[in-house]
Length: 434
Image (cartoon, rainbow, N blue to C red; front, side, top):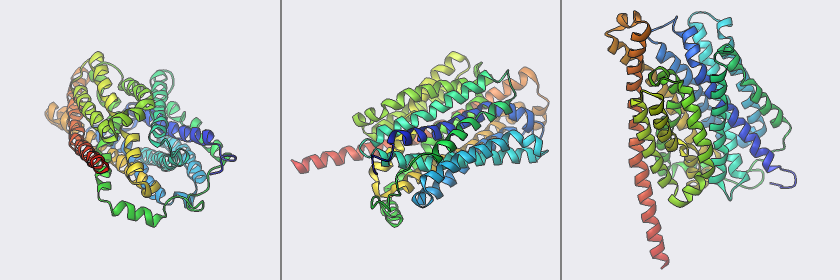
């Protein structure tokens, strides 16, 4: 990379804007999900509404997973500029599909249009993630963990802005107008990507592994798939609850759940600027073990919270737990499997997104099943109104959140084992040098 012609700072902040766009879109989708559900999904299928809205929210993660998996392998062939231009374009198209669904379709067609719009938005997120992580690692090879944590601090930054906009404007404008705000940063990504010089492909520059080397690196070291599976579980502990929190907990805790997501995102934004230094002290597996412990405790507390104070306390514990998970997982893979390149990072990123794709509909289905059971049957549930309906849905929300505690519990065993193995390997190496 020619430092005289490549502006590292401009490229880094373009990556920040792309991730900010993805995050603000995600938090706005979470914020408007209740309004969208009430206007379009409840009249179509009241008993299955939770599963349907969960599936629609989850489709964004499916788009993300497929895109990261495919495009990470051919990043240099496609080119980072084209990837980020496609990122911005997908957010424009996906957003327009969501807000216009009621105009261009009817009946279940409205739901399918919303589902498709969220899928396309997820593709935009995937194009961003597949590009900005290897770009950051290439720009800052000497400080990868810290820079990736700083970069990903802007994911919660986008969640904060989108969540606050969704909350503040809820009583002022229609939810479709709020959703359309995603168009602004998306157009910014397109404009900046079109006018920015990118580093040449790593293969053309004689740096980095070939795709064959990447495949060999991944499959000759089975330990990679432990990290792949761990990413599935860390994302299930972080991203899925974040998308579900406003729909499920707003009535139960006496405050909008989106404000809890904003609060947790603020914790993430601050903490991720220091996570790289904490990882240097505890090691990446050590930091991830501590994160899993806090995440599990926090999710259990959220399942029991019944007041704003209890919800804020639970969110604090959960937020401190999950805030460093995603970037530290990516940094761990980049450092342990350096010849895996962008595709190895993309694989673990796709695992994280697939988790939310599978978990969100299951959360919705558990919510629907619990509410029907608590009400005494589907017919009884459909006749509930007012306080009785809220009481049933509050109890069902508690059930759905309690089930999530299993994910960080498993991670405690996984990261504990890796942490212990690393310490033993380090001690053995020190003895050998002595």
